Image 1 (cartoon, one colour):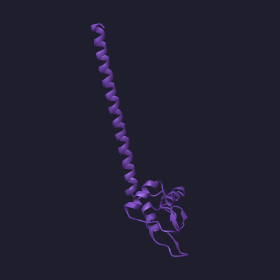
Image 2 (image 1 turned 120 degrees about the vertical axis):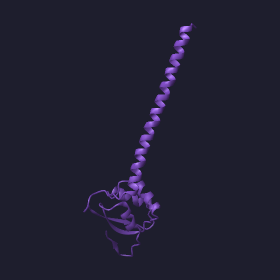
Image 3 (image 1 turned 45 degrees about the horizontal axis):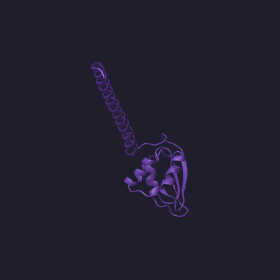
Image 4 (image 1 turned 180 degrees about the vertical axis):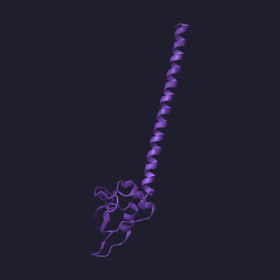
Length: 132
């Protein structure tokens, strides 16, 4: 191999190495930016009192049968259009130490998820309807 070929190979290797590092750094920066953005949005949904609709909203009756899992109840709230984020509500439930008790509840789309959890945390007597 000639001396010129060796020099070309060195330069090409250096360019490829630098390009690879730049691509790696760009990917790390993009992942960090996306992670920070999503983390902020999730934290915001946990601690900011937001609702699905503005007041007066719509009243929706929710029945929680005996033995139903909390995750299933929260999923039904999402399907009914009462909440936006199931995971945020599950974390709020654990963070604020709430339980979901069986019963029939009237919830409103203008309620925050924390207010809904407060209502679902109340024990309903037989034949009683918990209104907003």
